[in-house]
Image 1: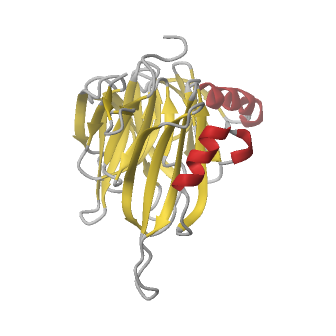
Image 2: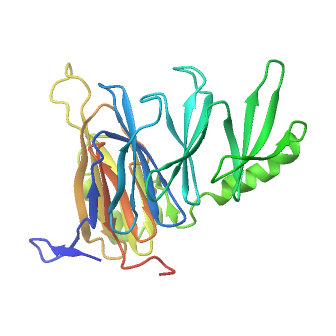
Image 3: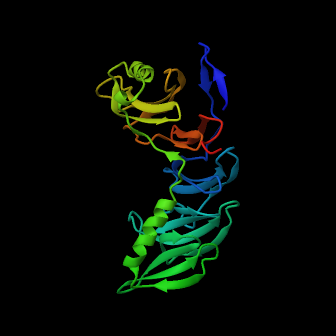
Length: 294
């Protein structure tokens, strides 16, 4: 774990790596092989692009990959060594349509099926749907080639159990998301330090916390609006403490001039806490030298 010393001699956490893809980071996904796939958007240009980097080092494998439609697209799933992108049946409508499969390591297009809609995946098989004039039918595709390997039409209910299990299996077991703060559940030193951080009455919205392996991370939003007639302006503060001693290991503003409180501003993945600074820079902060099993 990389640390620097504060003015008061206390250890301070230091980012292992940062990455700015060139746009607002919209979402990120993790692969089982230790890669991060993300989606970035430029509202003014109405363009979206995708990137991939190593989770441990932040090394960029590829960036600025665009789907056939530069705006109406998104990440559908990351499965094994493949990332699936989707389009939409119609602009401004939520229904997905189309599958574009890219190799995770080099961003190379493997196959595409503009008429299929992703339903779920099981191992190396994709279960997809196609809308006909009077019904929906299903096709099972090979993940790496897109070639059909089966069909289904009257077995949707039977397949729902497989779909539910496959969705649960895709959630990484070493991820932890913030929960609402309850000071009564914390050691006295950490609870006191949090009260000091929240000492003024300008805090807006709820406070979220992750309490794990002796480290306690929490964030809060503070009102920075100077006059009542000014538009809303909040700063999002992220603080990390040593749980038992209450020592501050990290304290920074990770977003300025927010219009409203942003939930889930940070999360844990293995030994690293990740957050997006100012909406544009993915930041990895190592809390421990390794994950519990590392």
